[in-house]
Image (cartoon, rainbow, N blue to C red; front, side, top):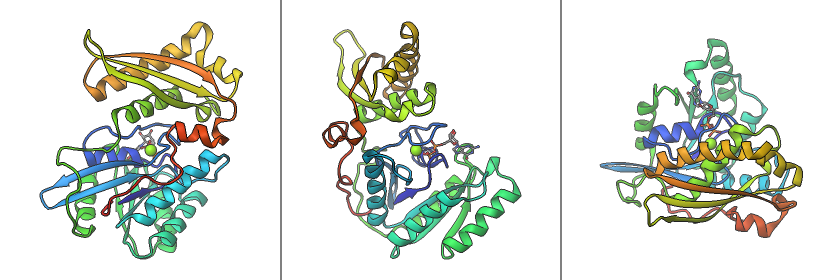
Length: 299
Ligand code: GDP
Ligand code: MG
């Protein structure tokens, strides 16, 4: 099941709710999720595999292109597509592009819409969204939910499980994500950068986990490099007397400790790699696969 929607509508928050824990980095800034990531919900008779797609958006870099391709593949391969809209704002051009992408790629599959942020929506904005959906996706069901507060989420999940075709269980019952701990750690470090850094800088950062191992003295040791494109960006990321780096590191460490349930010694450094966002080799190394990862049927 692919989860599609423009950045910031609450896809990651909703998947975390479905799954019951934090597997996808949630951020007030768009584009935190740069790769497709699975969320898995297992019930006695069904297993739903959610693919959290990075936002479909107009690409400015090869990285942007890869993110779009990954999202398109996920939508094409899905048995069911869940489109997420932010009901606290009227639907706009970006939502329309998502709706078009979904109806073009998923003609054979049902499309369900989650009208998210019901807690923050007014009658006017919800109505505007519904009117737009009636035009763009006339055949799809619309479910108002609040991923943040949980309202409507259980009902929507039940409905989605019913709509999924029957199939074998692909993952062990207690598994909630396919992302490796290192990927999750990299994502949490990126989210911490997004939290503290302004404007263009965060999108020029690639996080590469060099080492993640248990320490003999207890806890884990995690070394990661933040690659930026310019010296000026490095200066911003490091900050005056390393203050920014320290803030980012502390926030990321606390999140990673919460996720992994153990103490983490986090060693962050910053390096300049000019133009990495347009460099195929660098994109490969930083884990932006040229193609969507191998998907099992039923996803
Ligand atoms: P994504 O880019 O679509 O994955 O969006 P995120 O899940 O990262 O959420 C973006 C922002 O919207 C975060 O600040 C969330 O806390 C917020 N958000 C998500 N769901 C809701 C909701 O139901 N209500 C409100 N008020 N905010 C929400
Ligand atoms: Mg997200």
